[in-house]
Length: 316
Length: 319
Image 1 (cartoon, each protein chain N blue to C red):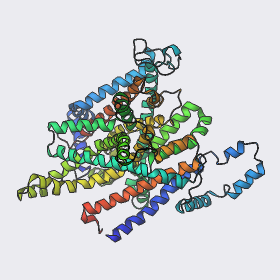
Image 2 (cartoon, rainbow over the protein chains, first blue to last red):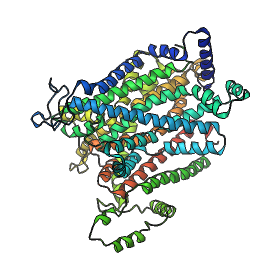
Image 3 (cartoon, chains in turn cyan, brown):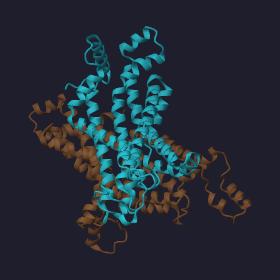
């Protein structure tokens, strides 16, 4: 069956590719991946859309200098107009400004939680993959256990229990940000750990690692210089998907009223506030919902493109 | 077979223990105090508080408290809801059927979408049908359930006025009218959950069937002169379902997460909306119990998946 020999062709082909590239001075591994990625038109489109949204939330608040909390009761629940391109909410606050600001938070949460999940997953997977016996068994049992935990109820439980004390400790905004990022990341490392462990198990028996060992490379050097770089392909794909999952998780929490406080209008929070005014101000719910959808869809397509681009076995 | 079942049941024990430890650790680490309300109440003297703490064993070591708590949970004594003033197990048992009904029907709907579409798309890879199905699947699982729910309410309840958007448990109609009303109000929550799951399962089914359909034994089946239908149904799908069952079992926690959101949007009186209400009302015993029930449901689903393996793949049953 094609694809049943994990990682070995990946690793050797990747190495061969890298070696050949250096010899010729031609395309490097990164350029090769970029060339493959470009062939995936939907992924390229997703990357363009995502870049646009990044620029919008990064630069938008400078260009659209309407304060996010300017209350104007004469302009309550207004439909989109030139003065308020995305309309206003029940306090007459400008939705464009709020979405641009909230988008920063939503996307920042997505990336920070992804980083936590990837780092934790890689460490657990690498330790499990390099050690044999009881450590491996224990870590994998822990991974399985975390995989079968009901994540959303636990997320809600943890946030409910720890919200107030963190608020006192580091202030409401930072506290809730740290809490949400840590909990979301803390419940998403398991797939990465399994991926990394599977890669390590096969890579550590490969000839190039044996050669490194024979040349006297320490265990750390073997892992850091030889095994880890070759196992990163699937991890990058998982990282992409994790950003989308974390953004959805944060929006879900905020949508349930248990995420960020109302003065931090993340996209999920905007939806939560808007859901009681669906019949008279549907624009209020539609814009943040569509923003979440577009970001997640783009990220999913990028992940799909990266999967193709980073898999040298796949002939394109 | 019975031995396999027994072994699977034994594997559950460490999982239940592990999950209960996680839940209890979270609770034990939490800064709050169940007697906080008493502590801030000036009418309760300090001696009474200390007496109560001693009576409920709050000053015992963590390990002792854990064993006592686990014993009570397993023994069916789940405590008393602060907010609803009834026993937690009664509260949950009353609401569990609704949740199971909504989740169960949505999973059936998801299967009814994913199996035919996935198999059909995989037997004609890169055809127009495949591309449309693939695009819709991407859109489907990129749409978060809370947004689909809001869109459904906007379109079907507010614009078209076809379906009610508040789930009621006190429908007064009788006979067929009763079932029709129930069907109408369950339609949107079930569709929101089912379409989301169906979209991601479609991709699993498609890629699993694509992996299997190129294998030699399928060619052999065709060479024997079997019709395409028999080849796909009897030879391909059954084997393709094995990895799909794994992925579906891994997704169970996410499915329950989606159920909580859906119940909250449509105000379905299930345990998901109970959890949110309890959290907003600081009703700790209910929160703990619902979390535990969700964990139990996940474990149960994993067990079901293991039994499905045996049916799908007789080779693994005696290992």
